Length: 487
Image (cartoon, rainbow, N blue to C red; front, side, top):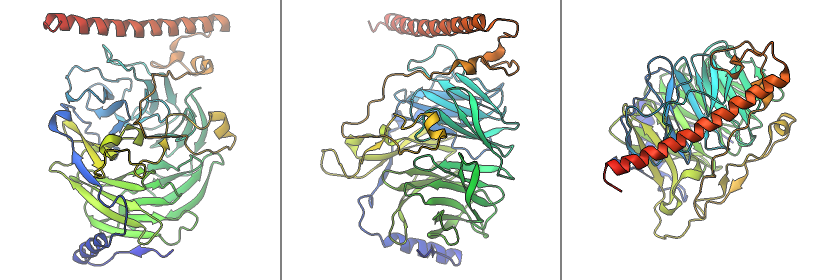
C-alpha cells in the first residue's frame, strides 16, 4: 500500500485537508453528530489537577466517572457515580492513598468497581470503589504495587486477561503485574528515555510504545523483547502518541519539523513507509487519540484545544477518512472515553467523551441520526463485555484470546459489585513494612498460622466497617428526608 501524504505551505495544507474532507465515500458513519449534554447534566465544581503531565486526567466506565483533582498533602482523585450530575459538594469524599500527585488512572475492563492509579510517589495502587457513596475519604487500596524507582506516569489494564496490569515510570521501566497476587510478572528495560504512551493491541498479545528517543516500538511482553521499531514516524521532536487498531495497524499522532500536528497509520510488519500520513494544523497541544474498535473511529482531543476531530480508519485509500469536528468555546484540560457498554443505544449514541474544563466535566455524545426507533444492528456489533477471556496463568503461558463479546440489543446493565480477590501470599509479603501496605504488621516473630489468622481477622473487621458505613449512610439519608419534611 502506498502512503498518502499531504504537504506544502500552511495555506496549501489546509486547502488539501479540506479537499480530502469533501471526497467522502459511502459510510454509515459519514454523519456522526457531536453534541454536549444540557448544563444540568454536567459535573460542576471539580478542581481538575494542574499537574503538567500529558495524561487524560479522566477515566470513565458504565458506573463511575473518575477525575484527578487538585489536593493538598499528596495526590487524590474524585470518583462519582455517573448519575450524580450537577454541583459536586466540596466535602465529597476523595480517594487519597497516594503521597504524591496522581498522574494516571484506568478502570478495570473486567470489573466496573476496580480502578488503578499511579503517582509521582513511585507507586501504583488498585482500589475497590463501593456502589454507595462513602461517608469518608477512601484511603486503603486493595493492593500497593511497588517496583519503580521514579514517578509512575502510565497505567494500563490488559484488555482480555484477568488482573494483568501494566505500569511505566520515569525510570524508563515497564512492569507487568498480576494484581491478584501483587507481584511483578516481568520487567522491560528496552527504552533509553521517557516513555510517552503505551497501547495494548486488540487481544493483548503485543503493545506499542512511543518514547522521547523518537522511536515507535512494538513489544512482545512474554518474550520480553522489541519485535519491531520505527525511528521518527513523525519528524518533529514534540511528544508522539500511538494506538493499535483492531486490524493490527498502528495509528500515531505527532508533529512535523515545522511543528505542524500530524497523523499517521502504519503497518508494524512493514515500518518503512506509512499507510497514510496527514498534516492537520499548527498547534502545541499533544493530540490524545481515543479509539473505538467496533466502528474503527478515532477521536482526537488536543490538550488546550476547544475541538474534537474524528476520523474513520478503513482498508480503502486514503485509509484515514476525516468525518467531522465537534467544537465548543472552552479548551479541554483532559478527556475521558466511555467503553461502548456505557452508551445509550436508544439514542443511536456510538461514543461518549467526558471533556474536562478547569472547574467541570462535560459529557459529549456522538450520535448517528436515524429515523427509526428500532435497535440499529449495523451501528452496534457485539462489543467487548466485562468477562475476561483469559486467566493470568493462561496469558503468561502464551495463550491469546479476543475479548468475550456481548450484545448491545437491550442496552447494557452493569453486573453487581464483584470484589477483587487478592491471594494471601500478597498479604503475607516479605518486603519491609511500609506505611500503606498490609505488610505493615510486623509478623517476623509470629508463627505463620497465627499471622494468617490475624490477617483474616483484619479483613473481617474491614468488611464489617464497610457494611456499617453503608448502614450509616442509609440512616443519614432517611434522617435528612424526615428533617426536610419529604417523608
